[in-house]
Length: 148
Image 1 (cartoon, rainbow, N blue to C red):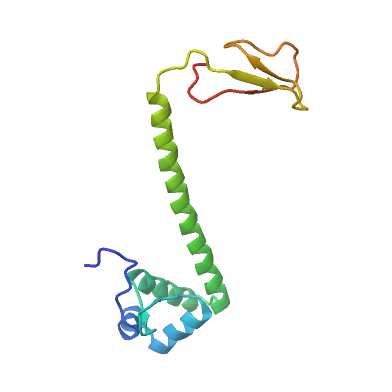
Image 2: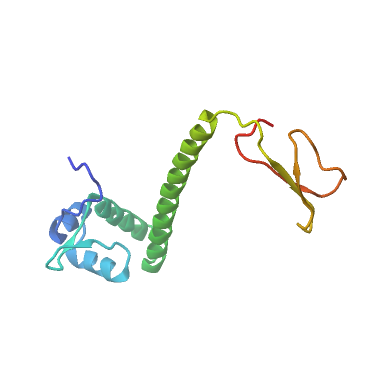
């Protein structure tokens, strides 16, 4: 069993057999940028299990009548979505770590709060619980973790 689905281990003949395709078809997909395998030091193609799964998906889409350009675009968008999901997961983990850090800090007694008018020229520091004097469109900014 393969532990890393992105590990490039299959030569083109094995990948073609696993995907139930002709090796020349895999070469064409590589040239078109539909499924791009890794390259071994001798410039030979090396396919991963993930690449083989992508080849099967290309075959399915092709059988449903999607053009090669359409398939290339679909694969490109799926790769983009996968990258964005990974980034969201990274940011979620980072946010969770920061949230834990902020909650574990002792409460600050003298946390400053600021208010600014629409123009930004009239910035004033406010005490805890104090509001801007005039009812305006002021923007109030406070620091995370402050006991509001």
